Image (cartoon, rainbow, N blue to C red):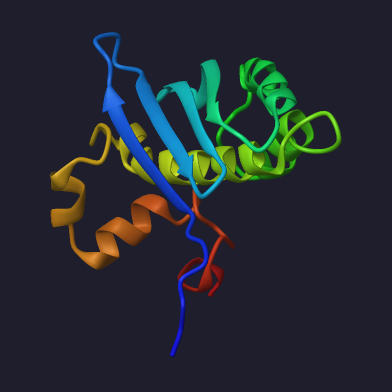
Length: 153
C-alpha cells in the first residue's frame, strides 16, 4: 500500500507574440509553492529580452522577495552553458532553488521550441517534424552536439 504525500507539477507553455518573440509561461505547483515565470525570448538571437516572476504561494512571505531576481535573466542566451548562468542569477543564497528549477525547465523547453527556427521552420513547426530523421538530425547536429546520446556519436 502507498499513500501520496506530495506532488510537484511543472507546466510550461510557449506562445508566439505579435512581435514574433516567444513568450514562455512556466508554473511550479506543489503543496507549498505556486510560482509563475514569464520569459520573453527573441527567437533569432535566443536572448531573453524580458523576464518576470510571481510567487502566489510560498512557505514564507520573504520568499516573494526573490521575484526581483527574474529581471537578472534579461540578456541570458538560451544556449550551451545557460544553465550555469541561470543558477548564478536566480539560485543560491540570494535566490530560490525552486525558481532556478523552474527557469531551467523553461529554458530547456524553449530551446526545444527553437530548434528549427533558424532554418525557417518557426516555433515548433509541424513541417520540421515531417522531415526524415536524417534531415532533422543534419539540421540540428551542430546545435545539439554532445547534448545527449544521439548527438554524441
